[in-house]
Every structure is written in structure tokens, then in C-alpha cells.
Amino acid sequence: MMSDFESRLTGKRVLVTGHTGFTGGWVCLWLKAIGVEVHGYALKPNTSPSFCKDIGLETEIDSHIGDICNYNLLLREIQRIQPDLILHLAAQPLVRKSYREPVQTFLVNAQGTAHVLEAARNVGTVKGVLCVTTDKVYKNNEWPWPYRENDPLGGKDPYSASKAAAEMVIQSYAASFPHDKSLGPAIATARGGNIIGGGDWSEDRLIPDFVRAVKSGDALTLRYPAATRPWQHVLALVEGYLMVLAGLISDEPAMYAKAWNLGPQEAKQFSVREVLELMSESWERPLLEYMDNPLPEAQTLALDSSLARNLLGWEPPWSTERVVRETAAWYRDYYKEPELSLSITLRQINNWRERR
Image 1: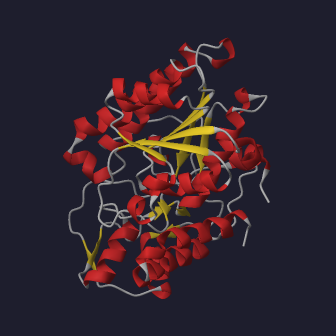
Image 2 (image 1 turned 30 degrees about the horizontal axis):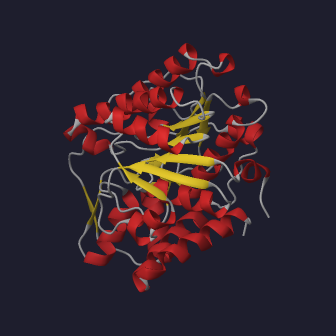
């Protein structure tokens, strides 16, 4: 049985930028499962293994390989697709890589977002755009209480600053080309916390590094074992994204064309060490080591998601412990039978949707 927001999306044409990435794969499979015509625009998968390839996404949807930094190509594809909605996920999402490639990070995250919004406003079918940024857009004061959508934005590292810059781009487009005057689509942003889940093979991320350590027998180096993060399953954010997208094509899009925090609902925050202990209990335990001089990175960061909870009815059903167990189970089952990646992923999507 479909939820209300799923029913509003059924039959619509949705373009997902960054569909070849970790979150993009989960989004596209959920959208397809509810009868959405799904299109993708992204770079080629850049990890091995590749979640996109393992689940056969390039044959599951209309997939186009392209760079959001190439505005003319992006515009031609959006003109060809004529989407009702755009979910903008494409990004350079890694903090440590942003130190190595700061200019490229700003180019992709800030200017790339401008390209998506400019193309969207020039294609009349596009009614709404949801741009995904990050919890790291907030000026981090290292305080103990969570950040709300109206708190100041900032960012010391290039990644965080590039995402805060993207938010400025988004605010400018929303103000300069308002949807209520038919000058552009309704625009929303989603600021999510750290996500985990099966199929993530990125560099410098805790769970993929854990998986690689388990399989290789090498030590896992921990940068900040006591740091807390808003851990949540990728499906929590996917569900929030779809709720906002459905709102952007509702009778009252202005209620949804705003910034949304999507962070864990639990009062208890889990440290890096605690998450690794849960992963170890659910699968295997790798060797652990500590880094002596890590690059700067925020120690404490939490989101106040009251707006999404109260206005969207966003209530992720799995506890943090369940999220970690399901993540460990995905990788465990994947290494038993990699060819079953698609069915493993769809099973978890269905369990989430049915609140099992």
C-alpha cells in the first residue's frame, strides 16, 4: 500500500542528478518501485565495487552520463527529459577530498547547483527542485544543542563552505525567480546528517572503511573515535526527499519550498566508536588504529528536525541499532552473493516502507 506522498509522485517524471552515487541508487529504486518515470544524470561510477553497477541501475532507469559543470549538456538533457521534478544529489561529498581539491569542490557544489537551477527555470515542465546539501552547512559552534534551519550558515573546510555557498545560490534563485510568479520552479533544500547503508564504497567514510578492513584484514584507522554524528540509514533521507518533492507539486508548494533538516530522532547520539562496536557485533571485527594528526573536522554536530517531523510527518522507523544491523547485513549478504545486490536492496526498501 502506498503512502500519500508516494501516490502524489506516481506517474510523474523525475530527474535525479548524481544517480550513480550511493544515495542516488537507493532513491532511484524507491521511485521506480512506486511507478515514477526515473531519469538520471551523473558522472560514471567512480568506485569499485560500484553500487550503481551491482544493482543494474543503468538498465533499470533512463541513465545519462554527464557532468553538471557542463551547463550546455545538462540543459539539453533536461530539455529532452522534460521532467516534472528534479532531485539534485550530484556533488563532491567528501571533506578530506575537499582539502586536496578545493577549487573543484567549489565548482561542483556551488556552480554545479547554479547550473541545475538555471537549466530548471528554462524548462517549463519543471515544477519543483529539491537540492540536497548537508548538515555541515551550519556555522559549527561545537555547542551541545542541535541546529535549526534558521541558524547561521558557514563552513571552515572547503566542503562545508562549498555547500554553504550552494545554499546562497539556492536562496538567490528562489528570491530572484519566485515560483508564485511563474518565474521558476519551487525550490527546497534538504540538510541531512551522516548516512550509512549498504552499497556505499566511498573513500574516507566510516562504514566503507570498516568493510574494506574486514575483507582485507588491514587495520582501520580512526580519526575521531569519540566524535558524535547524526547517524541514520540512507532510507531515512530518501523518504524525506520524496516527501518534500511531493510537497513541491502539491496545491501549496510554498509550504515545502524551504530548508529542511533531516536528522535522527533519537535523543541519544552515537559516537564513531559505538557505531563500530555495533557493526562488529553484527558482522566481524577488524583491527583498529588511531590517527595522530588528522585534518580539522567538526567534533559534535546535531540537527533539530522538528520542522520535518511536524509538517511532513517524517518519522524514520528504525532505531540507530537497527540501522547499523541492517547495514552490516547488507554487506554480509552482498559478499555471500553479489549478484543478489538488487534483491537485497529492494527487500530493505520494502521493509522500510512497510515499517517492518
